[in-house]
Image (cartoon, rainbow, N blue to C red; front, top):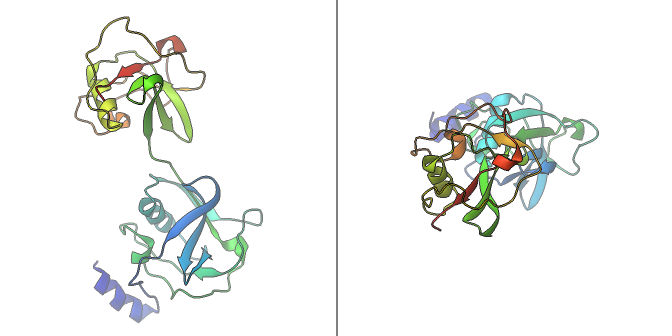
Length: 231
């Protein structure tokens, strides 16, 4: 449905769709992709009421903030409630919108929701990869970020296709050809996230390659992958 059609629908049912795109953020959570939802309006940050709020609405917020998939959305309760104004109420999204401003909602104005009704959203942070303990950011031991935690990758079945996907993802060119017994850059002490990684070489991100279930492995940290990229 186009924005103009949503305006017409909003005028019929008493809702509106903003012509502008209010800035949104998640605050007071453990990371930028988890927290109490706030909307910036009229020079002031304010809460969003959870009345009528559904999973589709939370999904749009995660999408707009580039925070991966939705984990959960729920009222804050008394321990994590906000202060100040409540700007938005009665939000209705379909889940296909790219931003919260494209959804239907009551006109942005002070609303009389209790702050324990503020909406709290947890999104899954985007997958990331990095090379650590090497001479530069394009050479080192591979670590990947999943479910809020950095962990290592086991070298079982690892080859140049996997390394090329890694180098491309972190914008470090392509991998240097594999040489057996090449120096490794230490051992991790945390979780081993990936094992038996098998890429075709066409993937845009290492998490799109075939691999075992996250954290399921038969490896030790002596098998942590190190990657050499051309830079």
